[in-house]
Length: 188
Image 1 (spheres, rainbow, N blue to C red):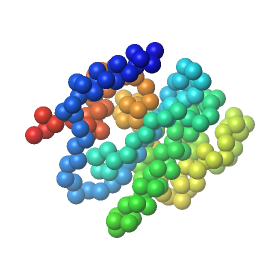
Image 2: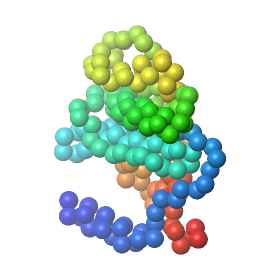
Image 3: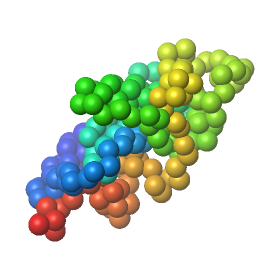
Image 4: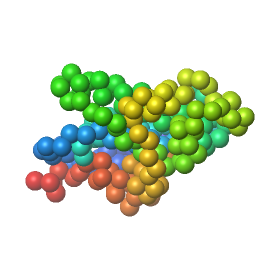
């Protein structure tokens, strides 16, 4: 199974030697974040995969894909954990940009799970959410401070899907292009 996956990756890399990140000149500087998870995506330990990406303007500047540290008991919890990790990265990026005299207000944060979004906005602990560890409520604090603003994004526009699950070729190529990962032969 691992050998087959490695061969697939090498085949992809061989066919994409001209593909790279494109950073266009833009005068608008704004940060936007996407987070997603693949609930119980790992077949070995049933842990979910978190995927995040952060764009400065229309340019991809940070991305992450990794198994979550704990087993999520619901899709809401898996999405909430992914969003919390992305929030921490977003706050760090925001502070780094302050070092370059770029002050950002609320950073738009896109998530495709309405239950996770509602959980970030509701400070009351419900019986259905008591199993979610306190450390994952970091995002709720940052929403209340006004550092980020979480918004719903339709699944077809969820850029972080690229980092959480295998996708059909057309969808993969569409998301890759939207992230600014382009075939450089076509750019010049």
